[in-house]
Length: 261
Image 1 (cartoon, rainbow, N blue to C red):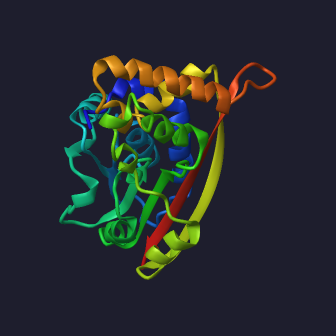
Image 2: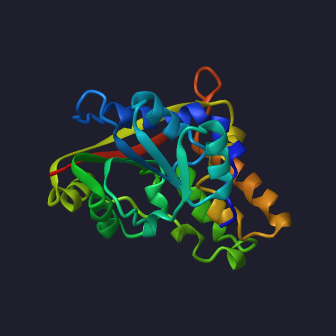
């Protein structure tokens, strides 16, 4: 895929950061007074989640990791006192253990969670936490419309395999089983957010910087606008206006916090 666009991503920053706040609220780490925790923020993006971590743990040594140079540049500008490094989560081997390995809406872009999640937990220090949330919306209209449009004759020649970029999220009990063998305790839950959106076009703009990327990037420029127009029409049908004229975008997200034994 082409590089990520921080400006597009942060257009809905408050909504995107809400799950990060909810996840952080469950990150209860035992530490001596004044002890400097070591924290890794995987898929830190433009630094919105890293900023939450820095406020919650002001004495911590925090390193944000991302594969996008554009996102890392935005994060460094936002948080010059934190460290940021380019890294692919699928091949992340930090060479040290962290008190908290945290990830907000990034692991869905890494395939093979059965091996990935225990692997990430192995980089957590004893008594520390692996905490993450991932969108669990592949069955929702906002996502199924992308795959359906991609099969239309105008787009199909360019989009074979575009729907395979994301990892299908496993059921709660399966995620628990993957982590429980290495963990002292595992907390796993699902939250179904409802985001009021001003229009179907706003829903399109939300996903343009994330879920739509694998479908837009391979298309010639002339077809990108056509795909977005088709998608917006599908969103108009899938998310009817509510009593105040706005649309409710349902967004389920899976959370887990595992404490390393």
